[in-house]
Length: 358
Image 1 (cartoon, rainbow, N blue to C red):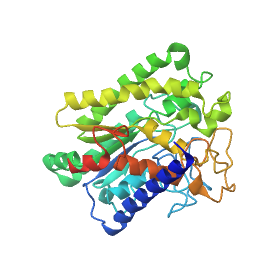
Image 2: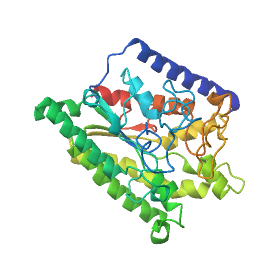
Image 3: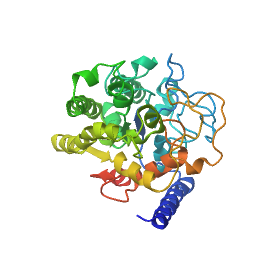
């Protein structure tokens, strides 16, 4: 695609994003009764703040463009989860699990945790984190609180079945597990294909647990182009390629297995509405529209922003804020294309706007 076409496409995507988020400002009646967020640092809104861990972002320059400043979000502004909440017309951002009040939990909770993975040991070398299994247990605790408040199981189940659930996890099972042979045994034990098979098998059990806990409209994000992140490029080098292709090749079997998993979950549970968001497809488009992949902040050895350092002045021209995490502008494009897919490759069998109407 020629540069002129790419610039035109970028302008179009920004226009779509502005229109979508502009609608949010006018129409503040939520499209669904509640919204629950699971995942890792791509969606974390502060769950790691009180943990003893290196994986936390509760210091500047994180949050430099966020209305509430520093909150524990691993970006300069809003996360993908924040923006999807806006597109769903909620009028406030969703609280981290540990601080969510009784009045807030009926609308939704954010369980995301930096360094968390599908596997429990993932990210352990960084310190504390809340794995997906623990996030599901925390969600069960939320449901117990909801049941206690509502005193009506039927109402609660009906309420939950209309809600949107997003799950964005799995990157750390590579970044902070399989790709760290000095800390974790997985790459010594499994080929990339076998590891993906084991990982997806566990993921399937976890997603079924979320269904058993009342989730029906469940959005599952695939993994992006991990080999194109500045941190992985710095560690592994590219041999002249734009990205670390060996890493993208290692992650590909996991992504390839996700859509069939979604189809299987929908087939086995007829009232389920699981859907797959193809972050590789969306990330590929981002990589092609000319945004810089140089980190916007000065990064530490682990790829996170060094504290209180200066950041690039034009953050709308960068994909990455630090060595791993997207800028707000990149998150805007991902959220917009997840909500309203530009291609059948981006979302299957539904985009989020379609899921809302089911």
